[in-house]
Each structure stands twice: as C-alpha cells, then as structure tokens.
Image (cartoon, rainbow, N blue to C red; front, top):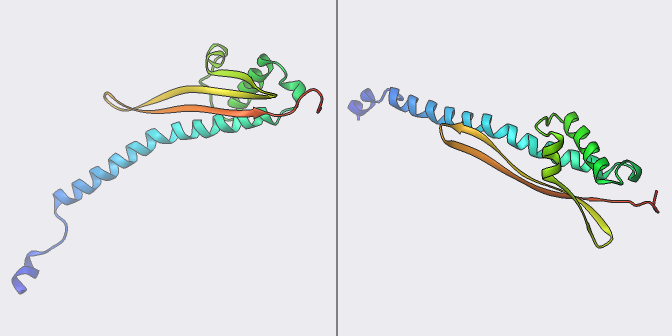
Length: 133
C-alpha cells in the first residue's frame, strides 16, 4: 500500500495538455458561435420592432425594409445592404393578416475548411391596418 501512495503524485503533463486542449476547443467554438447567435437574436428583435411600428410607417414593402434596416443598424447587424435585404425579406399576405419573412444563412469559419452555419428563417405578423389606426 505504501508503494502505491509513493508513486501517485498528481496529474501528468499529458493529462494537463489534454485538459487544456479540450478547454481551448470549447473556447474556440464559443468565440465563433457567439456572434451567430447574437445576430439571430438581433434580427428577431428588429423584426419585432418593425411589427410594433405604426401602420403608416410600414404600409408598403419599401417602408418595412427601411424600418427593418434602421432597426438592424441599431442592433449592430451591419451585414445587410439594400440589395441583400430585398433578397432575404418578403412581406406576404395570408388571409387578412400580413407577415414579414426573413430567410437567410450565415457561416462563420471555425478553422481550415470547417464552418459553423446558422439558418435564419423567421416570420412575424405585421398587426394593424388602416382601419385600426
């Protein structure tokens, strides 16, 4: 029994390296994934802000896109130009309700040829009408 206790002195150098490499991998993944998730939640918040605007401020698709662009800029999402915003947004009427749709994907390079990708496919109801305001 004394012989075993004398030989057990703690973690080996290889054990410490394994733990540090695992922590580094988690840290790298977190640094790359965090901007994708913050953009996703910023886009959702901007869409909600558009839905809460007065009807007169968003009664045409161009006004909806302008208000959305302003809210995206406020929330720190700067990757949208007018052309890209036209490609990824749609306002559709379903029955008597209008909805704002956004659909796009964004990739963040993890390392070499490995990427993290998020697919954003959201819709929000644009409530209100001319009669209600």
